[in-house]
Length: 142
Image 1 (cartoon, rainbow, N blue to C red):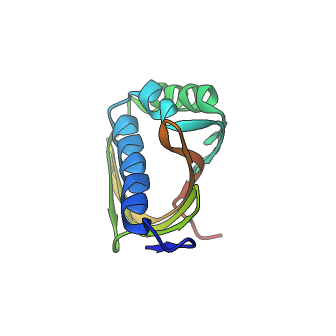
Image 2: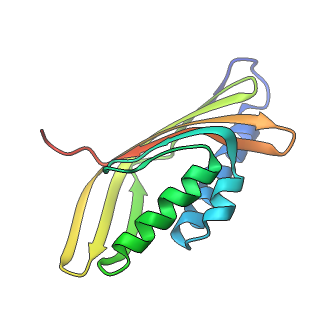
């Protein structure tokens, strides 16, 4: 982990990663209010699929509620395994996280695996680290 100021990078980076992990756990259990509470008011979120875009915590909760309702008949499980520990760079009150891995989606008619790319920017507030930009995608061939 890097830190422009040279101090506190490891603990700051770990704290930022802990917020991302809690965000993912909240999404996994369908607790979209908790996920939204870990974001800044001017959050920008991009996923891979059509409609996987949100600006602001309310929009994020609404987007995931809609996805959950649309996919609940076919979606069974989603797991993500990173290739290695995510790279975290802390620049003052901003942390940039980059990670790659493999995602496995299990649906009623089988499963598929694909690469997963994550880029996140978090900002440190009085309440702790909060997600500012989140871009998680499963690239598909053109």
